[in-house]
Length: 397
Image: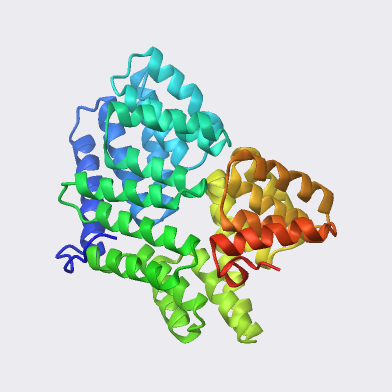
């Protein structure tokens, strides 16, 4: 863990203002004319950065429109790498590889970025060794924060948590930018690693560290609320989620409110938030379906019908068949009573190299559903060894 940092003089609100100003500046450049296609790319990249900072899907839609205008002006050729980055960001993974191929044929100078996206594609397709080879090759060419974070994430999902932490420490050491956002992001990643271990107090310390680095950041605040909910401090969690919803209108946090209210037995209040979240998820699924599958699926698994959850889980898994989507599909299959299909899928996931407490908890549920008691107990024990709080955190039977 890195040493505690003093509170940042730059807040999330200021970071957002800066991101909005970048969009406004790029738009003003286009308005002044004459217009060439790289200007539309600059606007698209600024809009995408704003979307990633705020979590607001409308900015992704605007970025897509700007990229379309860039291609319309470019004629033959165009910003293939920029479009590949965009489509990866919104999880249209089936569109990424073709643009990477075209970027390579056009002689795009950022070969390292093309390699990194190819490795990311392999990871989300469940091709973990291919992804690892790619991530290491990228680091040999260019050691930077994104490359180190990518490899750290690979190690987290493979169960190598100490190696994951070391890579984040290296990323922190080499970052010398002015924005506090990257350092806050790294602190958040450390917290997520501790969350996977069930070390809630340590996770909370990292999340507070992220919030000191970027005061007001909604994502750090959300994770703090999550820990309070896990610890049974529902009063704090409900208050925090209400404030975050006010600032973001994010349906995921409405779901969190609903779950906490249900635990308290307040079904009427929970139903209010479930209905609000459902309306927003429907809008997101209409606007950017691929980007919404994974997030909306959690809502439908908790609050939707069996048929809705299973249909969405299958779409999500078809798009990115890695451990995360496999776990969600297993849960949807179990809920639908398709226990043999769930068992077959969980065995595939266990053999793939994905190694998390969450996966082993899903395996325990799956094997219990098919009355394979010895295997269920084995994976329950593994899950608890990886995360002693797996019963509370992952619904381990």
